[in-house]
Image (cartoon, rainbow, N blue to C red; front, side, top):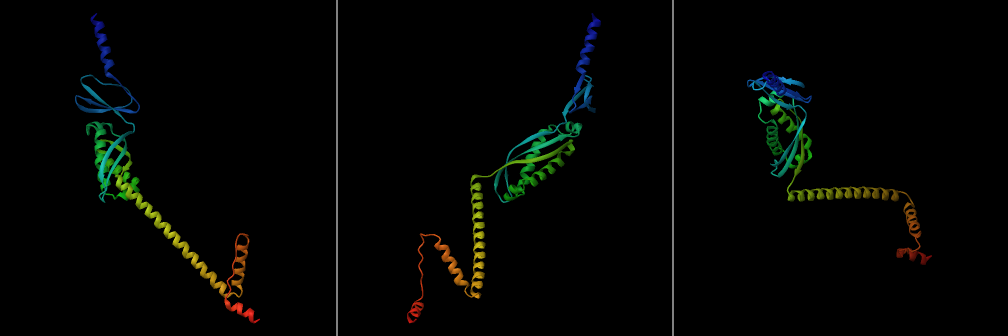
Length: 244
């Protein structure tokens, strides 16, 4: 009877001492409260009471950074949010050197994002989003390196502007389009006037060229039977005919 209880107790202790570490995990083991090594994937033994361990997921993770109020360098209030992609590269450091690495990364990303946007103008923030994201990624990655965490990427998801600023930007874009239209029209008129001057010079130098051009114009107008053509002749020509 005693032997049966003894065997059962041993089996129970072994069952609670064996731990399975999956391929994408690492185990951080502590013996009597002191770090004693990394548990690699497989079936591992953890002695109850004497030893303890933390299961660490080594896969890439994503943190959705909450929407933040920020002020640009030109004093425009905006709302921005982002996502952070990170991966643990040193399992022991992520347990020993930081209490809650996910929350720490989120808080660090929020402050870095606000500070980085405050250094940019509104036009730069809207037009250089990729460069700003890379800047934030480098700052956060440098800060999390002692924690054994690698920040792979930071992406600014959305930049929200006040409604009055949206209307102002729309008016500015419309004014820019009108300015370009006026410039293009003026350039076209300049080219047309230059061509007319060149044509007039050619007609003036060639004898009979103006008469041929007039006849060509009359021929074009006479192609439509509904057109009525009126000739205006100087009075001197009529008097010349009378004398003849």
